[in-house]
Every structure is written in structure tokens, then in C-alpha cells.
Image 1 (tube, rainbow, N blue to C red):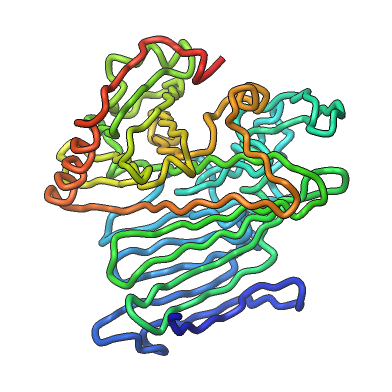
Image 2 (cartoon, one colour):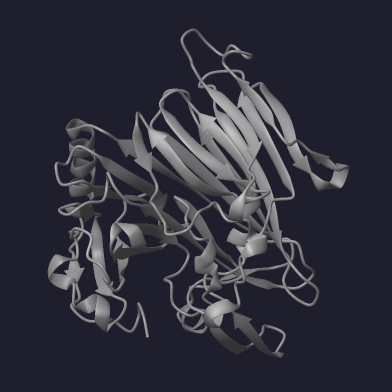
Length: 397
């Protein structure tokens, strides 16, 4: 077992909370030439008042974890390249200022500005009333808001862990509970890990049903990117088995489904559902890369854990949030009733767990992008790609 050192930053059970924290290579020497740091601070002013931020710098890759916002990733940098997007929100926004029921259940958007935002745990997708019969035969009616509650729920336990043996992983672990009386009690344990000098952050999540009855769960990872990776002429590439537009608006863009336009004021969003090809172990990937093919963001996941993949195009004006989303998930972002009918809702018995491990990596060279394109081409060579020009019943209503 690897030796490690752990610092607890938040633990409500023991009334522990640190307003600030810092460690790094200047205090803990892991190896010759390894530069790294972890710092925690609390933001003040405006809508970010009281938001905790943990900033991890592995010497090449920097990213900021938000325990106050469901353990999301606010933004990052890789060797000077910005990771994330410029939302029309002065965030990160404290959940106290987000009325998720507002605007007909779309209030979630008032706090949305992260590089990585989780959508779940009990549900994700559009708002509305979900009427169904549970496994005990009882009639239920749930009023669902956009993309669920987890992104606006603060973590109750947070710790930093550093392995003292090679490869010297730096980790941030947080626990967030989504629960209330007469409703499911779901616990998320989220772990971010990175290795000094690497271009990758690994995400390991566990959802556990802590209640005494079976519970449903869903998870969608909203990975959002803007410039410099997104620009006119950028492309999205992945090994395909099937691809379909989620609705008629998305169908209008099928001729350019794998490319991006420059910012256009008033551009209505387009969403595409992907069934990805994978290797014999279920491993697959997708990449967004720029026009010059020398900057790319790669999402790697296992389709046995995250069988659905969605691409969200929202290429409006820069001032309004020029962004695209690469979204591995347990389901497609349809209303929960539809996803349940298609077997894409998790069912967890009391004490049951679901878990996944996936990663994001950044490339800032033509050679790096070309290497990933070769990986994708190898997977594609073993799968026939079917592109549907209209919405398909198995993907969306």
C-alpha cells in the first residue's frame, strides 16, 4: 500500500472547517524537481460570497475544485491555456443565490459557469413533473428542476491526500449528500487525482444509496469548453457506432455536426446523442480540438460505466457564453420518465453503489492531437458509423 499524508479541510461530524490551507513542494518534498501545490481559500464578494475553492497545481496543470458547489471543477489552466468557458455569470455562484425552481425550473442556469459540472444525483435533464409507480407499487409525483440538485449542494467532508510514493498522486476527496425526509438519501464521494507534471485529471465517483429503500439515480458530467480550444473551425471527433440529433433544431446542423462555427449572437443550442465504439474493455474517448489541430481536450471513459455520450453546442456570442459540452453519462439528457422507459436510470438497493472512473487530458501540440486522432481512428476501424439525420426513438422523444 502506498504511503500517504492526509489533511481534513471540512468535516461537519467533528465540527472541522479550515478557512485556508496550503501545502506543496516547498513544504513536502516528494522528489527531485517535482513542483506542486494545493491551496484552499474562501471567496468573498458578490454572488461568490462564502464559496470554498481548492486549487491544485501539479506543475503543468492547474484546476480549481468547488466543494461548495457539489465538488465541481470551476476552471483550470494547462501551460498557460485556459480550461473552461466564460459564462455570462460572475461565478462561482454560492448555492444560496440559486433558485433552482425559478424560471419554470431553469434556475440552475443562474449558477452554471464550471469547467465540469455534475448533473444528478436523483435526476438530470429538463424540468417537469415525473409521475411514476415505484418498485413498491406506490404512485409518485416528483417535480424535477433542470439537471438535479447536486451541483448546488455543498460537501460536508473534504480532504486533501498526497501519496508519498511514486507516482506521487495529489488527490482531493469530497462527500456530498443529496437527501431529505421521505425522499432518497444518496451520497456522492468524488475524488480528483493528478500526478505532478501530467496533463491529466482523473475523476473517480461513487454514488451510494444510504437510505432504507431502493432508490433511482442518474449522472451526467457536463464538461464545458470555450476558447482557445473552441473556435470557428474546431472539431469534435469520437469513434462512432451511432449518432442522432436530440430534436428538430439539432437535426438542422447534421451537415456540420462534427465542426463548430465562430460565435453567432442568438445561436439556439444544438444537442447530439452518441453511441460510442469502445475497445474490448469498454474504454472509449472523444476529443475537441481547435482549427490548427494543435490544442485538444480529451475525455476518456468506460462505456460499461457511462454508456451514453452527448455533445452540446451553444455557440452564441462570446459575451453570452460561447461554449460546447462533452458529456459522458449514465443517460441522455431527456426527461427522467423517458430515460426510465428506456432502461437508462440506475436502480440502487439499500446500501447499493454505482461508481465510475474517467479522465480529462489536455494537449497543446500538433503531435499530441495527432496521437489521439490515431487512437480514435483505430477504434473506428472496427465499427460501422451510422449518422441519423433526424431524431431517433431510442435516443430522444
